[in-house]
Every structure is written in C-alpha cells, then in structure tokens.
Length: 202
Image (cartoon, rainbow, N blue to C red):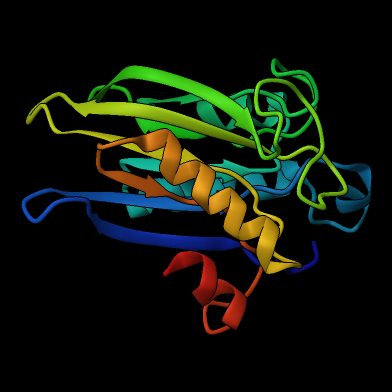
C-alpha cells in the first residue's frame, strides 16, 4: 500500500475563556472516491488511522470537511462515545460533502444547531462569493455538562483563493455566534505563515 499523508490541519487546546480549556481540532477528511482507492489511499485505508489519531489526541470536539454521509457514519462507528451533526451541502440533508462537527456526547449537550451556506443566500444550497461549488457552514451551540460553560463551534471550507470571499465567510461565522464565546475551525488549504491565512484568522 502506498504511503499516505494524514492531513490533520489543527489540534489544539483552546482557551475559550481564561478559566476554560477544551481539546479541539479540525480535519479535512477528503471525500471517498475510486481514484484514491485505486492509488492505495482510499477511505477504507485512511479511516482506521484517522480514528486512532482522534482517540490518541482525545479531542473533545472537532470539525470535519469534505466527507460524505456514509464516511461520517463509518467514522462514528470507530469512535465510541462520539456523535456528529451536519448536513450535505447539495440538499441540506445527506447529499454531497458535509462540514460536520463531532463531539463527546457524555461531555456536552447540544443547545442549538444549524447550517448556512456561504453566500448572500444563506438558507438553501447555492454558490456564492466566487466559489465553484456550494459551501456550507455547520454550527452548534454546546454546553459543557460539568461546568455549564456555553459556547459556539463552527466549521466549514473557506474559499481562500481570494481574500474577499474568505473574509466574508469569517464575518458570517462571527455574526452567527452573537455574544457567546466562539471557536471557528475551517479548512483553509493554505499554510499558516501565508498572508491569506493571517488575514482571515487574525
């Protein structure tokens, strides 16, 4: 089997408040396709390694990008104690790639949740802000059961080939969170030292 690279984009301890720390991450899972399988780097080969990495990092919450519905369910089967929320970008249900959020069900309760599209029309599938494909953002308002700490978590794939679409996406994420602490974990597809990364994450 060909050697492959695990694309873990970020794992970190997030200081959402001075007193609260959570172990969070984001992972572009890559959509399952025949070409990857033929090359020896298919979803079936990647899945056990991804699951082991999540468990090793002991992530409380992590965002995902690009995965299809069946991939999310198969990953859940490999992660005891985790649940996920999200919707397909093509129909708002199961079709197309998802930006899904995984979380430890015994540690958090879900107060609110939803999805919106990265466009001027946010409530139905469509393309916007120079994107070639629909881009969906998934959000969840969590409450940590032990402390009652409440916060928002959002994940998506941002079009960062141009700064304007990425900046608009960032603005939408912050607007949706309101007054609550928020952690937005998108897939940016650029290195952290680039000007584009620094512009949309500052």
